[in-house]
Structure formats: C-alpha cells, structure tokens
Length: 513
Image (cartoon, rainbow, N blue to C red; front, side, top):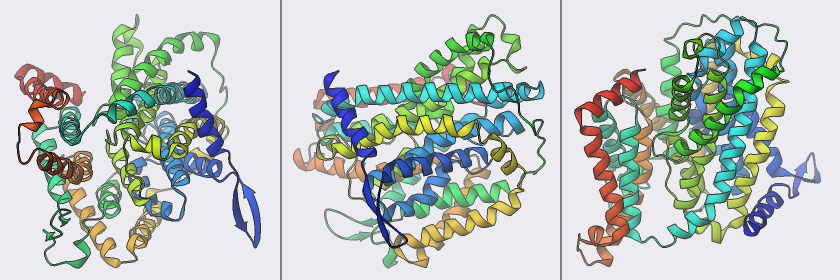
C-alpha cells in the first residue's frame, strides 16, 4: 500500500508539474500535462457526441499532433480522447437515439425512452455519475495491479512473449463480432501487412514492390486513418441525416432518492464487469456494456421494464464501458500487448517517442508510467464537471448536418497523414486504405483485428526468431517452457471451444442480439 501511494505521488507530481511555455513572446510556467488532459477530455467528449466518428478514427487523426509534444503530454491527451469518448457517447444515445460511439449502442434502449418521458436530465446525470465511478474503479485496479503484473512480465523471455501474443490474437478472434472466418482472415492480412519493410535480421527489403517509401514498412498512422477514418466518412454519407431530438431544453438533472437506490448496485456490478472485460483481447468497452446490460436484465425483478426507460439500463452499461476503457491500459502498460485497436494505436504513439511498450517502462520511465495513470483520475473528474454544464452545447452540435462536418474531418485527416513524413505518399496510402476499409465494411469484416495483427505481427516475428536463435533452431522451446506451453494450450482450448457447434451457434446468436 505504501509503495502504491508513493508511485501515485510520482504520477500526480508529474501531471501537476509546471513547464515553461512561450506565449506571445513571454515565457510562462504552466501545468502543461493538465492542459493536455483537459484538451483530450474535451475532444473525446466532442467525438463521443458526434455520431459516426469514434475514438479510434480520432486518435489516428491526432497521432501526428503528438510528434511535437513530450511523451507524457501526448499519451495523456490520447488517453483522454479514449475515455472521454465513452462519456460523450451517452449524450447522443439518450437525446437522439443515435450512438455516438459503439459502446453506447445499448444505452439507446433505455436512455432514449427516458428522454421521451421527460427524464433526459436524469438519464444524462446517471450516465455521467456511472461513468465517473466506473472510470475511477478501473483506474484504481490499473494502479493496484500494475506493479505485480510488470514484475511477472519481467520474468518472461522471447518464447513466453510470442505465446502471449498468439493467445492475444486468438482471443481477439473469439471475441470479435461476426464471422470467425472473417476475423481470422483480417488478422492474417494484418500479419502479412506487418511484414512489409526491412528484415531486421538481414537488412533486406521485402514485399516493398520497389517503392522506396515502403522500406520502413506501411505507416501505422496512414493505415489506421484510412481504415477507421476515411471509410467511416464514406459509410456515414450513405446514412440518413434525419434526427429527432425530444429535449431542446433539459431540466431536472438531479436523480431522486429512488433513482439513486435503483442505480447503486448496477453501477457497482458494471464497474466490476467492465474492469474484467477491459483487458480481454478484442473485447473492451463495447462487449463490457452489452454484457453488463444483459446481466442487469437477467437478474432484475422487473425485466419487462428494460427497453422502456429503466434507469438500470443506463447506469450499468455506461459504468461498464468506462471501467473497461481504463483497464484496457493494464496489458498495454505492463505487458506491452494491446488488447484492442485503440490500444494498438497507443503502441504506435509510444514507439514514435522511442518508448518500447512493456514492463521496462515502469522501471526506465516511472514518471511517464504513473503520470498516465494519475492523469486518468484527473481526466475523469474533468469530464463529470464538463459534461453536465455543457449539455446545451452538445445538443446544438447535434443539429449540424454531417455533410458540413465531413469535409473538415477529411481535410484534417489528410493534413495529419502528410505531416508524419511530409510526404504525399502517406496521404495516398491513407486513401487506399480508406477504400479498403469501406470494402471491409460492406463485406462485414471488422477493421480492429486487422490493426491488431498489423501491430503485433512485427513483434511476434521478432520474438519468434529470437526464440529460435536462443534455442539454435529448436522449435520445442515453445513447448518445453511451462509458461509458454500454458499460454499456447489456452489458445488452443479457445479455438476448440469456439468451434463446438453449440457454442458457435450461441456466440453468433449473442452477437446478433
């Protein structure tokens, strides 16, 4: 406990530290990290409110912005965008019945009905309070489990890391919505794309097709921006813009005592369930919110009230998705393994600043490690203060037609892609991946497994070849080491279990619901 408080003291000291900033020719000492936590929270909320953009595309767009920032400030801002979008997504779900973010889809079921009954203010406050509690609970778990997990990871050698990544990719396949075959195909495609570039062992270029810009591999920013940014813009232009907002003027924000009584246990259960789902590979916030809603409906004494304005149907999923967004950082910061596509982009952000994700971050750069964790508490506090007073602003934004928004988004994407290397080739690459992403959407293929395979592919190859070098080409090294063998057996068991016809049918039915 004492060491945890000491570590958190390092983190809070880092985010509240004053740095010199040149403003209008005058040097001022400002809490830069707090400023970027605020910027990330505001942008995240905005992105969550606006339907059809999402945190994944936004973080991909803003990744080049972090080049000019210090590593801690950049990661704090990107993290703020992620969990800020979880807050903002509930606003659109409740007021317009349009989920601003995937994990807020289930909030539409009861939140929108509460708005139609004149209880929009109570629904929004419930979502904000649940999000705050879930976010703080997830961050507490992250701080508590960070040290023991990092110490465990330091005992891992290349075979264990390779097997862990195999398990992560298999888990992403099992928990991906839709067809298993399509998820496997997308991961394999991502692994193949990750091999483009220069072989680290031989120094020979491979799969570059003679294009000099591909010698260093396909750019993560261009790929993510295309698959998740450009393709979303194209698909959103096909949708109707008809929106019906029942709550132009929102009053009675404060829930009653009965409301607090009804939401207390769902918030607690949502915090626990969301925290568990957060670090599962491929699961994350969307799966946590759906599972939490399903649990509350199953154990409720009045299940018929769900879908008709039950406050539990707002509190549980909104708490769960925020708790999951915090605990998703556990495998990233302690093991260096991204559990979902957003964390995969965070890996790219860390590598841009020459930070190798993994347990060494805690020992080599404790200020960065604990600063990011401490910033989550500050960011969650900012979000609950920001969200409720600015509801009027968010409602006004919802009236802006998407046809006016997408040119600005597209322009910003192109500028971001260009500034990575100051090369138009990156813009062209993003456009190509935008077309591919749109094709993937049409065929029902998720982009998240593709990105996970792309990010983990080079790391897997490196650990695989390093393992064989250490064992002098003996493949049994993966099966003779107990931890490596255990991880591979778990991965194999997942494949066997999900292939069982009854389980496969139940999985498909669950995702359809």
